[in-house]
Length: 443
Image (cartoon, rainbow, N blue to C red; front, top):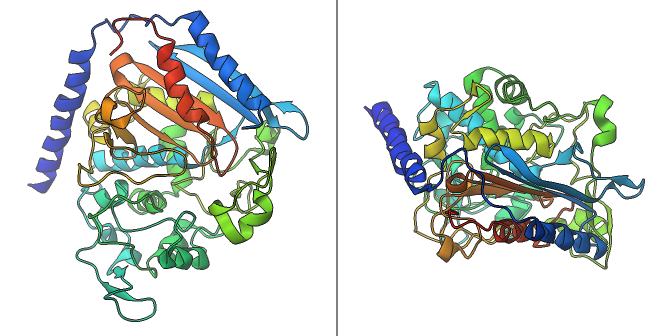
C-alpha cells in the first residue's frame, strides 16, 4: 500500500508539473526564442570587466535553448601561472553540482523498487541507527545530547532535513565536532564516512528544518549498499557512460591532466584556511592556488567518492546531464528516469514552514523551495530572481551554477574556479540571459 501510494504521488507530480509546463508553453517545441545579438553581447562585456577587475581568474557561460547552444564563451585562465586559457574542454571542479547527479542515481534505484523514500536511512545504513540530537540546554553527557523525536528517512536525507550539518560552514559547537572528526577524510571510503558520521549527534530533529549538510554524501553510500557497486562505478556505468559524459568522474585521467583547471582562492585565504576554513577572509586583490585541503584528492590516492562535492566535469558533459533532465529523463534515446520521477524531483518538498537558509553567496529567498536534489522556483516574484516559475537549479562552492527552465526549454550555466566564492557573477548570469530575449512568448 505504501509503495502504491508513492507511485501515485509520482504520477500526480507529473500531472501537476509536467502538465502545467505543457499548458503554460505558448510556442511550439520546435520554436526558438528571439535572442537579440546586441543584448547577448552584454554578457561578454560584463564578464570581460569581471576578469579585468580580478573578481575571478577564468569563467565560462553557456545558454542552451530549443536543442541548441545559443551562447557560449570563455574568459580568462584555467591556469594563470602558466597563462593557459580556460577552454571549452577545460575540466573543472564542480563541487556541489555533484549533488543533482547523486540524487538522480538515488532516484534511478528508487524506480527499481530498491527502497521507499520514507524508509529509515538506517534500514540500509545501520551505522546511522539510533542517532541523538545535540542540545546544549536539555541534553546530557559530553557532548550534550538527547533522544531524537524520530530517526531520519531517505526523503529527509534527499531534502537536507535529516539533521546533519556541514562542518565547513557551521560555527556552532557541533560544527567544531564535525571538523575535529575529519569525516570527509579523502583517504576514507564511504563506509568509514558513515561509521564516523553515526558517532556524531544531529543538529536538530529530523524533518523539522532545512539545513545544508553532508546528506548527499550519505546518499552515495546508500547507492553502494543497494546497488552492490562502488558509488563511482555506479555513476560511471549507469549515468556517465550512457550519457556520453566522457570527462566526468571522481578521478582525473593522467592523459587529460593538462586540461584540469587550477582551483584558486582570493589572496590571503590559503594561508588562513587551515585555521579558519571557509570563514577565512581575503587580504587583498588577486588570487592564489587554493589550500590543498580544498583540492579534493582526484588522483589514485583518494578514496572518498563524495556525492556532495567530489566530481570533476566539463560544461559539455554537465550540459548533457542537464539536457536529460530537461527532456524528462531521456537524452539521445537513452532514458535514465521516467518523466514522472523527474517531475517528482523538481517539485517543492519542504513547504513553507521556513525560508531556506543562506548558503554561501546564493540567497535562498522566500518563493524558493527544495526538491529532490535541486532548488526550485515556486514564485518568481517572491524569489526576487530572474529565473521563471518552475525553474530548478543548483551551484557549487567554486562559483559554478546551472539552471533548467522547462517553461522556455532553456538551460543556463556559469562556471568559475574560485573557492570560497564570494562574487555575484553566477547570479548576474540569470538576468543577463533573460534580458537578451526579446520575445513576447517568453513564459
